[in-house]
Each structure stands twice: as C-alpha cells, then as structure tokens.
Amino acid sequence: MEHSNTDGPVLVAVEDPNHVQQLVRTAGDLARVRSGAVRLVTVLVKPYDSPFGVFDDETIVRNFSGDSRELLAKAEPPEGVVVERDVVVARSVASGVLKAVGETAPSALVVGWAGLSRRSDAVFGTTVDKLIENAPCDVYVERIGQEANGVDSILLPVAGGPHVEAAAAVASAIADRNDARILIYSVATPSFGTDGASEFVEAASDTVKMTPPFGGPIETKIEATDDATTAIIEESDAHDIVVLGATRKGPLRRRLIGSVAKQVIARTDTTVILARDAGVVRTPLQRLGELLRR
Image (cartoon, rainbow, N blue to C red; front, side):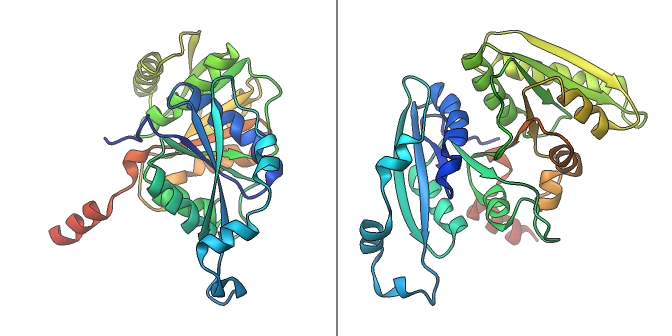
C-alpha cells in the first residue's frame, strides 16, 4: 500500500480564517513528527463567467489574496513547526486544493467541515467529498467548532481496513504532544465475534506502537453489544478526541465514509477527526489499467 510522502509539508485547506487555529493545531502535531512544515492553502475561485477571467492568475493572486500576515498570525503551531501560506487560483475550491496537493507532494491534507451536509448527494459537502475521493495523500477531516479544551485521552475505534495506519498516525501525533493516552476500541457484535474484534485491536495496537514518536500509554477495550454505533458514541463521552478511520469498503464516497462514522459524527459533541489513507486513491495510471483489463 502506498502512503503519503512523510517528508512533505502538511497542507491545511483554509476558507474561513476563524478556523485556522484549530486546523493548524492538528496539522502542526502531524508536521512536528514529519517535515516540520505546515502550508496554508487558500483558493481564489475564478469561475468561467467571472470578471476575474480578464486577469492572469499571477495578477489575481497579487491583488486579491488579502493579508497573509493576518492569516498566519492566527496560526499557533507547536514549537519547531514553520507555517507558510500558498494562494491558488482555480475554477473551484476543490480543484485548487488538489492542484496544491499535486504541486507540493504533501505528507497529509487537513480540512475542516462545519457539519454533515443536508444534500442527498453529499456527505460532508461537495468540496470536502471531492478531496476525500481524489487527494493522493492521507486526508484528515476535522469537525470545526468542536475543539477539545486540552487532550488527555484519545479514542481510536477500529474495525480493520486500510485506514488504520492513517488514523494511528494522527492519534499518535496528538497524543505525543499532549502526553495523552490512546484507547484502542473495538466492538464485538453477534454477527462479528470477540475473536475478530481482538484481532483488530491487536493489529491497531501494533500499528500505534510502530508509529513514532509516541511512547505513551496505550490501552485496549473490546465491548460486546448488538449496536456498535451506539457503543462508540457512548464511549466517546469519556474522551477528548475521537479518531475514526474511513470504512474499509468501496471507492464511492458514501461507502468510503461509512454509516458508522456518519452517525458518530452526528451524535457526539466530542472532537472528531476522520482519517482517510492515501493508499485507497487510484492514480490515473491505475484507472487506465483497470479499464484495459475489462
């Protein structure tokens, strides 16, 4: 499985300056154990029918990008982490962020969202959905406004799949900087027994232990219940942050996010970060190969 370049910066997609501090805190924790660099990406949208169309991209950036110093002043990264800003001109926010990802080869992308979308064809909103589907790096989606006031405990629910490594990376980075514990949690339902849950917990525990530099306390818990979603929600109340891996099935965003994650997000006030591993995104060459094999 391919993963993000750990030497690359951690990108933060910024639309609202008021959200910068929360997102940079998470991005800074990741950057602290990687490249030591965070890049804020702001997209100036130039629709096809926009008056901006008469200007070239460089002119737009120079004249309409706003005050970078004010934005950077809102960011408070950990010691040793450098924060810079990029301004990208594109036809949409999603295409602009993906352009920045392609140009910088980041180790991760951190984005925020304000709440679940009410549109039937979107999960987080069309921009974040497109980034989850297409960004060829680890992606972390953090709910804006539900920010932990100090971090003592992080809940990491696991049920296998390709996103455990990405989830472990952010949980370990946050726990390391805050001297917090990580509880690795799995649910044994009647249709999925204790043995399977134990395997998931053991594998995730090994992954966290192999994710530097975290060396703090790791606890494990398996709960037998008929309702996995409710169990995770109730357990989340005892923790400051919940890190959820995307589901293990399917390339489409509704299946990629997973029904459990959506319900947990909707029914808890705890800070939630959704982790999506880079390895699930197919490159253009892989897509071409799939077409040729049909």
